[in-house]
Length: 214
Length: 256
Ligand SMILES: Nc1ncnc2c1ncn2[C@@H]1O[C@H](COP(=O)(O)OP(=O)(O)OP(=O)(O)O)[C@@H](O)[C@H]1O
Ligand SMILES: [Mg+2]
Image (cartoon, rainbow over all chains, first blue to last red; front, top):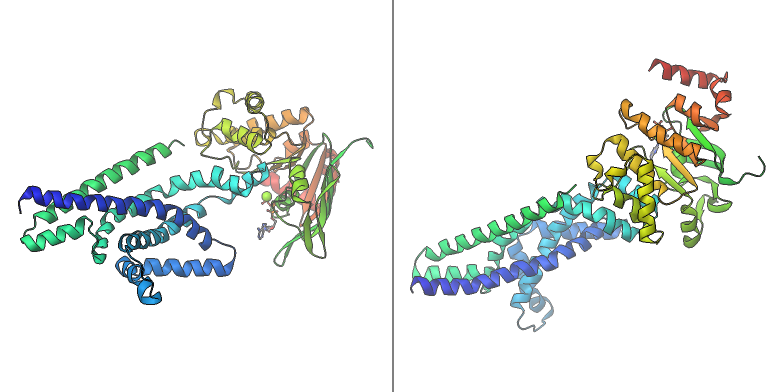
């Protein structure tokens, strides 16, 4: 196999890697808020159940969670789902990352002084207005560095999709490397992850700068 | 005197935090156009009283009325608020200026002022904008409308906070130690603004440790001590009182 064919095959995997990356963010960033609100709920039952779920998601390997999501429906409920491989990956990644985002959101919210809520309340803002106009914009700025860290980790974590033999870049790379007995595919993959992450940090830093207007 | 309107009436307010009884049966009223200052030692319950008046804090017994309308009362240890719609109307009657300003840091000075009038009171945007400009001019901040709070001095921030409260056109304005977070050289500019409001007959309730200021601008002074109103009257009456707690309080301030 020559270098060009190798590159072609690996590139086709890159698209899948990028897709996993973006879909995971699209689902996990909002889902994180729902989990964060559950965690902060005044209802003790809801908050402790949510806390327990978060601790499991953060305390067990993502690889294992992907397995459970993929095999669970069939092994547990005998559901004959077809074409479940890709959705399972997105579901597994999204839930796992949402748990991490939830804790980041929660720490951001707790950093907002209670005086902000009181001022909003006295001015007559309702709860929804207070959250979206006053709390959220301040939280976003506080949590952005921590979110950036998670997003960079996600770029690298996409390679875990190989556990479900999904044809993303890392799975393909591994196959070529073992059949062709060469390290070149790994070098290509490493370069890709590296450049991808450079782009991610560049974008996030731009965003941070933009939010640093006050 | 009998003609004047009562803007705020608080009756038999009691409040405890755990075992600590902070307010022991306090009643007071605030009349149209009057400046009422509340003084007293630290921990005597002044802030708690303001927080109950502005409904940031619940009470254990008593009632609160604004413009004759009941905002809240306690019956059988349960606090009952007016119906949501009525309560919203009642809350329009007052504003509060905090010790540490509590401006919204991510909003420009102008947005701090106009956001609530536009989105809460649903008033016309152009009208709100031009009123806000006037208010800033009055506060000596005409050139600061595009600044963010962090770019302003403490005294300027507190004046923005006062303007923000005034932008909603409250009937009563509460102040909780509006100058105690400020460096001494900045308190003057804030006190001057409050004095200006007093001259315009703005109804105000001011918790303060600035004794000469309180004596100077107040129509009436309440001296609180250990959760009760120990003295109440016109400034001279209160400051010249023989009351031993008051004397002790003034003496302590002098030695500070
Ligand atoms: N949320 C709270 N929980 C428990 N105790 C509180 C709470 N708020 C106030 N207290 C206590 O109630 C007492 C009265 O407090 P308050 O803040 O009303 O006093 P103050 O007269 O405003 O004092 P200062 O002049 O220091 O501001 C204090 O002993 C305070 O510790
Ligand atoms: Mg106080």
